[in-house]
Amino acid sequence: MALSNIKRVKSSEIELKDRLVSIQRVAKVTKGGRTFSFSAIVVVGDENGIVGYGLGKAKEVTEAITKGIDDAKKNLIKVPIINGTVPHEQYGKYSGGRVLVQPAVHGTGVLAGGAMRAVLESAGIKDVLAKSLGSSNPHNVVKATIDALGSLRDAYTVAQNRGVDLNKVFNG
Image 1 (cartoon, rainbow, N blue to C red):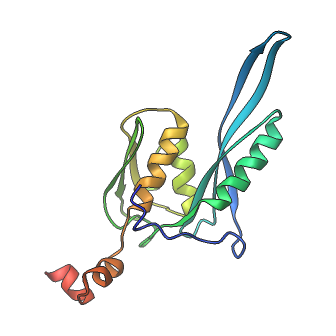
Image 2 (image 1 turned 180 degrees about the horizontal axis):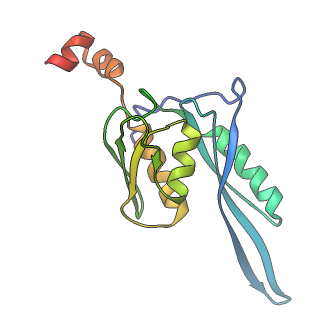
């Protein structure tokens, strides 16, 4: 992840909504038989530009989800949103998961599947074209989507980093 663009956010001052992306039941084989536990990946966001993900593991489903929500609140980032969509096209990558996120005109909706849809809707993006290009594993897709959203920059940020006027960013 490009950590230079990611703006960390404190979870205490905002109202977050959580979305369950995936639950897996895993088994450990012991002498006494199989011991089952659960892992849950959860996405939280305020639907206004702040989003985060977390992984929770426990012996019961509800505990795993609760742990995932707590973990997600520790990993919040701020996403630039312009007119309900992303400012520019961006690729994201994590392990085998690769994603493409493109801006779309008003009225398009969220054209994304599964794990990507949960992340984009939690971030508050209303119109976007998105495609998962690599692995369909929800863990890697969520992390790749967060990577893509964390790498987005709006025109004001670009102008500030370059030390030029905002008009010069658009007109050269």
